[in-house]
Image 1 (cartoon, rainbow, N blue to C red):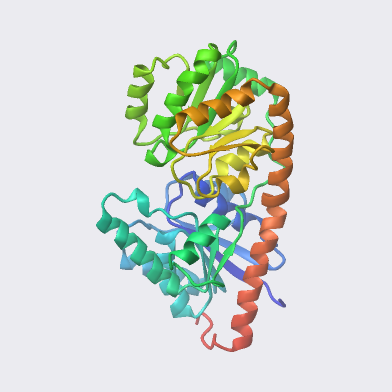
Image 2: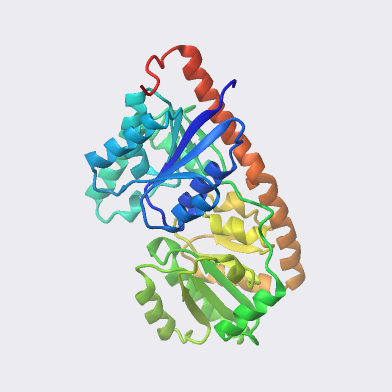
Length: 388
């Protein structure tokens, strides 16, 4: 490429989440000699401030599941004003708002599909509507990036996109930023009232149906029976909190399971874990597992979505079937009984994530995709109108 290209990474919400992390990492770590990054997202969330601290230009645009022609026009005007050369949309909602600008300005658009989320819609009609909308949008997209091989296979098998239109690219992880000092760990333990407790295990995630918390709580009963001083940190917030509190009380786990609520910085808490536990019924590719591995933590996870692509069974952790509390308890107990094995798995876990999810490697892949699309559009002569 013989010029500097303007790239717009766009996502609907500015909250803390996996899609937002990918948006930030992609925009922040592109080669600035070749690409100039812009970010667009809804106002009022941590993604906006994080991008600004990195020196990125951020355009705040109200985007949600209620379609807004005004927001579509704002996206179009921004793309035209900044002479954007390529749009990278993260998630379906952002793609809906961005695809019209891409087509109007005759520039390529990429869609990062961070999992299949139709199951979060209640009722078959809404699920079918979500699936139909996603398939229609993808027809207008130049390329789909899936964050796991599992999502790539599902996308092709279920007719979201034809073979060759999708590409698996793991989410980028900044591998040199994972270190928690002993002083920080001691302070957090004191603040949580768990200074003398051992072992400490836990999980991170939105408190919703997908995460399989009923299975997790049942499994913890067996684990606590052997490790009476165990504490489980459940980091996150969501609609299932009341249900979790009720089940925690019914199972006699009130002193063992600590609900920390939303935490702006989860890593110091995860740094306390001896084992990270994921009990999900379904998943995309959960970045929390990558982050736990980067802290040298072995993971017990259910074999759903992209989890087995992060957790290498018997090497960096253990994979169990979803919805089986007995299997989950056996796996957790197996690791807790063998601290040496935990440490060995943790070392391999960090090596595995560094090799496959490291930011330089992953951003290199994304830059290659951008370059191929931009050169194809330039060489084909289709871009007769260049943003005005």
